Image (cartoon, rainbow, N blue to C red; front, side, top):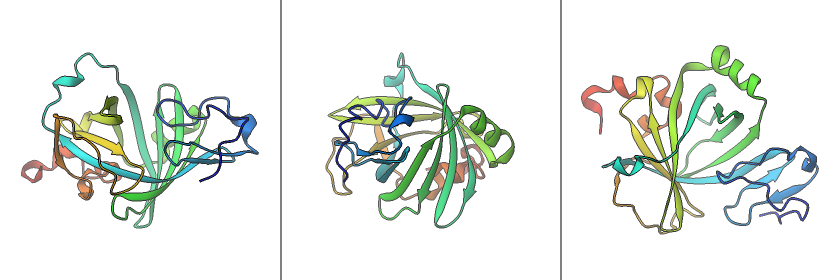
Length: 203
């Protein structure tokens, strides 16, 4: 891990993304001391370690404020995916490597919103994923709960990012079956095989 640059004391926002106005630090290399992310020349790079679960109850989301996200895929191969995402007036281009176990490489760049909207409208393959994300603190961790809309309506998943694959964590009472290794639940696959088309094959 690279040491946090003294000129960049608060480079990441509450969601773990680089804050606005960080372009002046493009010549610096810096890292988050808490999650292993490294920023090099404006890109956030990390070894993402993530586990994904279904939910057995969603009542706890009532009254919580979520963030509406739209995302599409410019490329999907066996080795990597290239994703465009918009949310809350901002946009990101993300490259993710092949999943091995629970982890994969990730590179993320903030891009102009207009560029992302063009990609979503004209350049992405398959449908655009429409979902609302809730960030739910529990037992010292933040769970990202995604409620899907449109062709994936009815699908709700929760994800947790870890520092290492064998890191222990406490499961919330609303957590259901784990689907980390099930490719049907990868967002990159939901654009071509949406949840509502699964029928009896749903878990």
